Amino acid sequence: MNTQEWVKQVIKQEEIDKYLVNGEDFINEDLIWDVINKNQEPTKEQIQKILEKSLRIERLEPDEVAALMAVKDEELWKEMRKAALEVKKKVYDNRIVFFAPLYCSSYCVNSCKYCGFRCENKDEKRILLEMNQVKQETEAVIDEGHKRMIVVFGEHNKSDVDYMAECIQNIYSVKTPAKNGKGFNSIRRVNVNAAPLSIGNLKKLWRAGIGTYQVFQETYDKKIYEEVHPKETIKGNYRWRLYALHRAMEAGIDDVAIGALFGLADWRFDVMGLIYHTIDLEKHFGIGPHTISFPRLQPAPGSYISEHSKYLVDDENFKKIVTVLRLAVPYTGLIVTAREDKDIKREVLSYGCTQTDASTKIGVGAYTEAKKQEDNEDAVQFMLGDQRSLDEVIAELIDDGYITSFCTAGYRCGRTGDKIMGLLKTGLEGKFCKLNAILTFREYLNDYASEETRRKGEILIEKEMKEIEESDFFKDKKLINTFKLYYDKIKNGERDLYI
Image: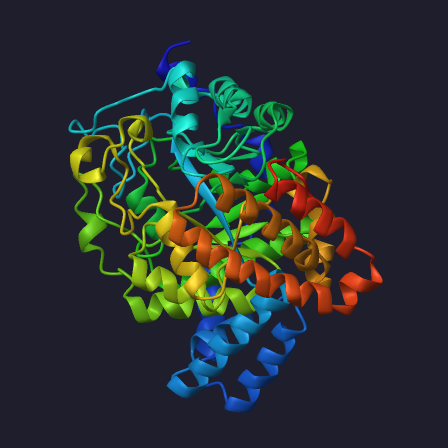
């Protein structure tokens, strides 16, 4: 099948229509603007009641989210950020989960005006990794210390679902000797960032062992969506993308991830779009997204709009986005990426984010060649703000009192979908995650950390161990002895033990 024939058969209209209500989707633009506009003057008392609700780990309603976004008093924003951090600690404790992206293909049939991979960009060097190259890239990622990966694909018949599934299987097959320690390490969870797929094709990814399936709507503003995604392309179909994660849930993938590319449209509208997306997933499936992402538009090779959009989000509004989303969906993970520069990334990690990447390379094949983006501008999708190594970022987080986690225990113990959401809402998952975070952090300190990072990390672990020993929860559940046993085994060379 050639590319044109492949494009024609991708979209299954019946897999859109089944989710519509009276022919309408869940993004009602007039309603969203009405909600935003009528909540422009919230009182301090109203905001404090909303914060109390969030601290009870309850999802906020659209009117409450709009009220938070409308706050103008800087002192009240400080109170909101403080509450956001408290919410994060209640649900996730003081851990930050790390992952690395792996770009497998830069071929794409779409023409997104903000993206370096768009099909008419003649300056883009098109690459499709062979499976031996996928393995080589995976080895390079593992050699940094990573154990979680998100694989990224352009939308093209060269990188169709069978190629994706083969990539996943090959990534899981790689085992490589630890740099400083004993034994072998591997990628333990492979998430996927890819184009919307049909239910049948999503089942193929599920059988291949996919972790989380991530599709960003880019913008929920339908007019702007149409302007930046030409109609004749697959991505030009707004609703095919809007219901991508509904189809994934139906296919059996119970951890899905939503996001918007902030800077394409008014940031307040896209925050509201993310909330309505969450609500609709909960309505259909009983659970919302596993994570929410909020990348900002960054310069992309050959893209005018990526640097000149009238909706570009400055740092102050970006911090508001993170704060509001943390409070709005308190039990969902928030991802801040290496798109952001190190200072703003460090700040938003301190009041709400739960996951980030490091040692990131977004050129196809860039890990093996150890290329920086400045040397690889013809093979990247956009430009990064933070190119520091994993060890450098971890060392900084240690200074800020955060435990680095590479934990994948919950997924392999069946704590996914509605199960993990229930545990997150009650704070129980955070307890298990604290233990497993320390175990994986110990692995990293043994196998990959610099001497200085190892020294600082061990001091932090001592503090965390003392908290665990004094915790009534861990005493009551009789988890302390098992945890200490596993910790000692990992310290002495065993790997991949979890609770």
